[in-house]
Length: 186
Image (cartoon, rainbow, N blue to C red; front, side):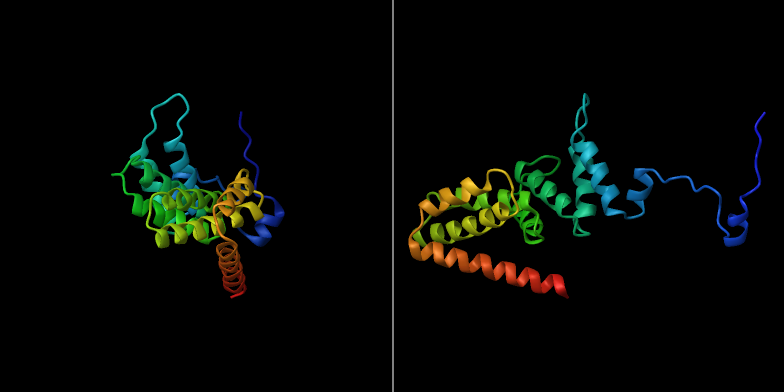
């Protein structure tokens, strides 16, 4: 026999149901919750013991990324860069990874720094210098947040730079931090 008790006195006084059933992740994602969208995307991308559904992962990462979810942006960028669930598009990959890096995500900053470093190889001198400056900046920012491997990576980039280039890269880093701090205060 199930006994159904009346609502507690405080519920009668203040209103509202005694218990609200929790919404599931799919429902929250469908209603626009970026954290739930990211969670669904992650589940589709990394299904243990099952084949990943990269197209659905991209779908949900994109929804969360469009709401400035930095980890969704990073993951979406990687999926574009690797051609997982979408046609391979390095430019779109860099776009989304860059958005996450700009928001201060250290993993995205590390990834972007490595991509800039890699891009510096085999380019014309001015393009190579620009890529090194950006690589240094992003890797240094990731290192300042303690992201594993970033300290060694930015030091390796610095070894390939002139003293003037390191000074310029440090100025870029400081300008980025100042702009980020100003933006955060608004």
